[in-house]
Length: 171
Image (cartoon, rainbow, N blue to C red; front, side):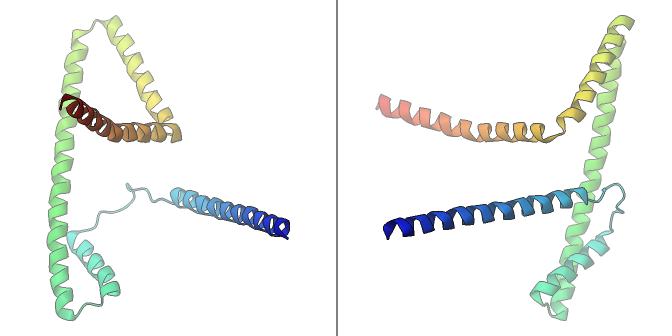
């Protein structure tokens, strides 16, 4: 009798694990479809702060069921927030342009220091480096980057434990 129950439990466990793995594959396929359907940001028109505030207020109203007075207050709040974000976005765009110009000026100054032969070698190396960026854009690059982030998180903990051990041995 025990053998029958054991076999039945084993069969049930195997069928359950197979069923759960099928669902994981379905979820993965859905995620892949969503990635393919992403909208190109360059094609999107930026919304005005008023549009953003209106959309956010309407979205929140569906969930929270605001009164008319609350809708007006939330709209004013969202409008102020959207205007601040637009100002920050514009500042960042300007800062990025300034930085690009500085980098270009430094690059030009550096290239003036090189002889024509050195400049040709330098441009070839630069082109090879840019080509490599596109190749790294795949999955391997992301996983390597994530691994480095995990290592960075672990390092302070290891240092703290070493310090604790040293302090306990000194006491």
